[in-house]
Amino acid sequence: MATPVLGCLAALVLLGNSAFAVGETGAQFLKMGVGARACAMGEAFAAVADDASAIYWNPAGLRKLERTEVLGMQNFWLLDMSYQYVAAVVPSRLGTFGVAAAYSSSGKIPRYEGFRKVGEYSAYDAAGTIGYANHVARLNYGASLKLIQQAIDTVSATGFAADLGLLYDLGMLSAGVAVQNIGPSIKFIEKADPLPLNVKAGLAAKVGPVVLVVDANKARDNGFRLNVGAEGVVLGLLALRAGYNTANSFTAGGGVTWKMVSVDYAFVPYKEIDATHRISARVRF
Image (cartoon, rainbow, N blue to C red; front, side, top):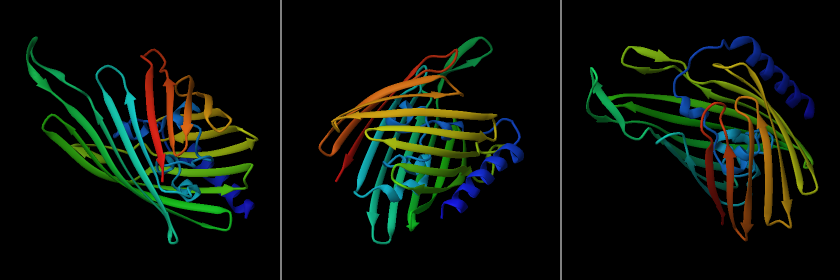
C-alpha cells in the first residue's frame, strides 16, 4: 500500500512544480493557517492532521479522530484585521464528518473623495466547509467542499472550492498529500481571479513524545516552499512547539491539555510586517 501513496506524493509535487504559474490569486484569506498547534509547527501538518483543524490542512486526517471534537481559533491579525475559525468533527461507522466556518474582517477602512475623508467602509471574507474521510486499511482518504463569500463595501462575490487528501499512517511514520482550493475563479464585477490552489506533500515521524514534521508546498501564486516543525509533549500535559516556514519565518508556541480540553498558542511573525498571535481551544467529547 505504501508504493501507491509515495507515487501520489511524487506526482502531486511534480504537478505543483510544472502546472501552476506564479501570479496573483483571489480569496487570499483561504491561505491563512488555522489552529494554533499547526501554526506553531511552521504550518507543516499534512502528515499529522489529527485534530479538528485537519479539515483545513488535509481532510484525510479527519479519519484519525476517534472522538467528537470542536475547535475554535482567534487570530490577532495585522492592523485592525481579525480572523476567526471554528470546526467540529464527528466520527461514525460510516466514516468521519466535519464542518468548519471561517470569517475574516478588515475593520473600518476610511473612504476618501479627493483628499477629504467622507466616511468609512468595510470588507469581509467568509467560508463554510463540509468534509468527509474514511479509510482502506492504513490509507485514509478525504475530501471537503467550501462555499466562499467575499464583500468589499457594496460589492460581493461568491465561489466554491474543494480540497482532496490522502494520509498513510504507520503509527511512528506517516505520509500525507493534499490539494487545496480546487475550483473556478472568483469574480468581483468584471474581474475574475483564480483561487490560491496549493499542492502539498508531507512526512511525519513520532519518536516517543516528540513529533518531527516536514511539508513541501507548491502554490499557484508562489514558488516552491518548505515548512518544517516539531512538537514535544511533557507528561501528556504541556506541549512545546517550533517551526520554520520559508514563506514567513520562524514560528513558536505551546499548549496545555487538561482532561478533554486543550488550549494552544502560536507566535507567527511575518517578514517586514507585524507578528501575529493565534489562540485556539479544542474540546473532545
